[in-house]
Figure 1 (spheres, chains in turn purple, green):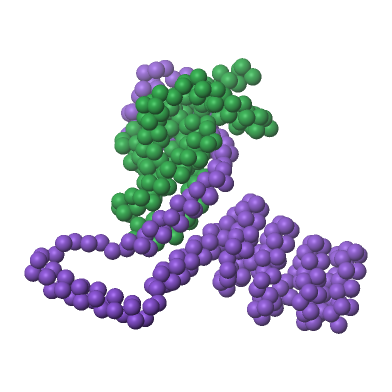
Figure 2 (cartoon, rainbow over the protein chains, first blue to last red; figure 1 turned 90 degrees about the vertical axis):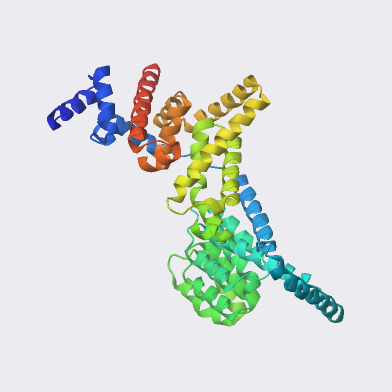
Length: 260
Length: 175
């Protein structure tokens, strides 16, 4: 079919005037890639509208079940990471003999050293679980939903000792998260790590960046609790800010009095 | 995914985070059942994990994922057929959900009508439109999932859109 004929057919279809035979012909042209679906304006508009319909969301239960399953699989994978193939007997015999010797040596060694190997397994498993939690936490922190980010922050409380990556992510959240509750939760999650000098300094630097009265007061209270004199300079910056509410200024003033 | 296949299981979490929503959207679009769709998402990722060594790495992961998703869905309905689930109970369940859904969507009439129109299409047509949506109109990839040519997929989408348009216009008149 000539180009002109194709254009006429498309125009006829778009006006809703095409008969079944013409629609059949149009299908052939679509299949052969001569007519793109986007050329059929009213259909492609409908298609675009359908693309824009918001998606239903899976429940949080899906996340829980998936990560439980993944942990279980990782545990299994760490237990069995070798494959086995029967070698020829001539090769196997000396190996077996060597194996038996090693086994006896192992038993003897174990008897003498009396240190169970299990400790290492448990340690590596614990490390893996912590790594996994870290990974989940960092990916949840990127989410748009504040509930997810809160969940991420609360995950850190389950970690015995968070890594530098985690504390840095918490500090970033404290400084940059758009939601006050998430920032407060991040501050709370950082409490166990305030003894680390870099964490402590980052928290102090964060004081002057905070615009929410709730976070400002929480930070001032934490500084009093820590008896952190270095924070006075940052707290004074808040006093100088015009935007700081009067009540908050009073609380900060009290905190400064306690600190100096 | 190649990382996951070669042992980096922890990366599967990232793939899950990236694709759980479109996957759920596909299942939910097909069955309108939140709980069942949650289960099917879980089952799909279980298979991805179990058969990760079979991912060849020569195509897109998303195509492979939806291929598995379709199989998971088919297997589920085959099992349900064997079990002979009470059809009335099933319908009550579905009705309950669509009522909730329409309440949720009242603020957006057009989206509600499109959803209703989608529900009235045959499962095959609904499936091809959902795949077109979640595969971002990559007809070649959809062809790989459905086992047909790119041209055949375009014709399927064309027919499905025609039907959708017909149902949508009827609904509009009824409103």
